[in-house]
Amino acid sequence: MIMVAAMACLVVVAGVGLVVDDRQLIDESIWAKPFKFGVSFVLYGATLAWMLPKLRRARRTMWTLGTLFAVTGIVDVGFIAVQAARGTYSHFNADTDPFNAIGQQVFASGVIGLFGASVVIAVMLLFQRVGERALTWALRAGIGLAAIGMGVAFFIAGSSEGARTVEDAYGRPVTLTGAHGVGVPDGGGMPITNWSATGGDLRVPHFIGLHAIQVFVLAVLVLTALATRVTWLRSERVRAQLTGVVILGYTGIFATTAWQALRGQSLVHPDAATWTAFGATAAVTALLAALTIAAARRGAPSRGRHARQLVHAG
Image (cartoon, rainbow, N blue to C red; front, side):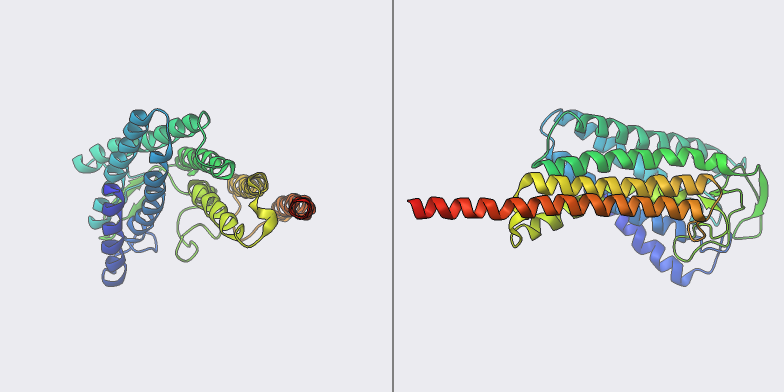
């Protein structure tokens, strides 16, 4: 939560910078990246802070992993914020000035630390249950997809077309050895996200995977709230099955966007193959949801009649 508080402060500072600072890097405010990273770490860090105390086994190990994640997150995002304030690039920057050279080494090590901590937490979740089945499935799948989403980041640097020289916010030449785009240079991206509108961009599946856990937990909370009004949702088994359907559909979206990006295709310009994949994901998800709901609704009245028969018999 200390990390979350620090990231929340960064969101405020970067938000002000977006308004009052006109410096830009590749057609985007220098404060856009710190702002987006700050928001992302607020959401993910708060989720971890809520989840880890619920785990009953290996509490000391979990505390250590959470602390490792928090410290690494502050260092990594801190480097991004400082580079933004300096008017230069945090990612792929190959300049040899001492601060950048040391910072890049720390930054690269931090990515591995964040990924490693998430993977270990995901594995440890496989061996313990947290609350009802729906929540356990949501946390296991969510942290697992988050780890895979972080793993996608390792492929981002390899998506560039080689080293190139660009200018920083002050017009100074900077050598970049990587890029976010696949098959296209960075720049000219979508509003807010800045994801490429002309080619593939691995930041799309990276984002989708990283925040899967929030989507899955939200689905569980919605189903639990609806269960107070909908009789057939009061079964823990039904809620777990519907949570599994959400997980399956979301994983399909993640896989399709990753496949799309690796083929050098923009999210907003899908081809027939991508549309087919999205359509198949939607159709399978809808079918499984319909079958689960139909079976649950058939079972609910019979349980109700049985209860009434017992009352009358009494």
